[in-house]
Length: 454
Image (cartoon, rainbow, N blue to C red):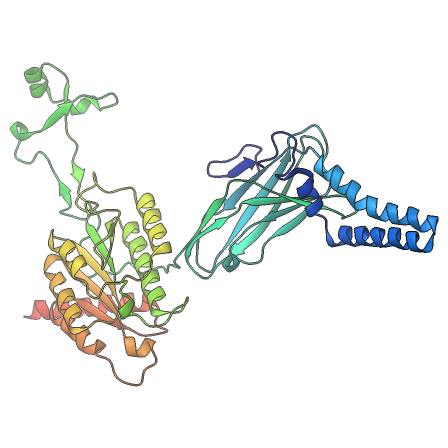
């Protein structure tokens, strides 16, 4: 680990590290920080002094004074200790899938010219990440450092703060213990688990940069070329001499600008559409499925947007429609995963807001992860197909997830979506997304075959 703090690293001196090293409250705080052993010695000393007065034993008086003075002297020495230390934290990695581990590296630097005594380093972590880590550090030499690490793991996605780092000072006899806190903290992001999906071909789908996806700016001959001014580094073979003579400055032909195929991943977050809670619930399956589908389409070169039933979209409503507007795949993937890490149920009862967003423009591929639908929501989802070139829906079977013996209307709603042109599949507990993804391709192939035969 380098001696320099990396970007995003928690590196901050303790509030008391710049001067005397005293905690707020001064000597009174030091006396209040005596340990059980220190209080026991103090009580025993006071009792011995009282007994010596009652019994008239001078030797017992000396013992009592020694017992009572020891914790007081330790508190005074610890109070006047002038340690100057700096702490740092580094997460490796700072973003992990649910169920995976991240390692937290801690470093303590003694920036003073005096050695430290016995130190205990403690980091504050949420209970879902595991027990609070504690490390006992022996004497740290002047300008020296100590490095320790621990692991954290969570089965629940979310954003979890780590810190602030706490440092406990204690005397060699264990009579007094002071706690000093650093100010900075880091955040561990636990994103949904993702699964690798096969590169299937869906009905109406075009590849991310396939044939017909390039928009040429000069298609009708030399007179229709749209030039631009010459920039440093441009190839001189692209100089357009006619425009150069016309404008009086060096002009070059524009390059063809590729148009990326668009894909919208729709995630239904309505609380009424899902049953259960926890890592194995239907909602977590849908969130994980949306993350897997988004990453898969980004890897295939698509411009991907994440849309929820509330109409909120990530990376934004203008993300689709061209390479100039689309963020880099790695940035888009990180943004979507960070959003899905903290996404929760909405209070909505329908998907009309998402339909309004899709209705405003012509979408490419639409992949939807839907909770249990009612008749009105199913009709709204069916109308979404009119604005897409291809549409795939994974619909949660509420009765199966709730382990209800009564049949649900999921099959009827899936049939309604298929009649509207969707590739729709019901989702039941225990069904992995990769298998359903391949089934979607088979269903889509049957639709293509039926249309070709007609």
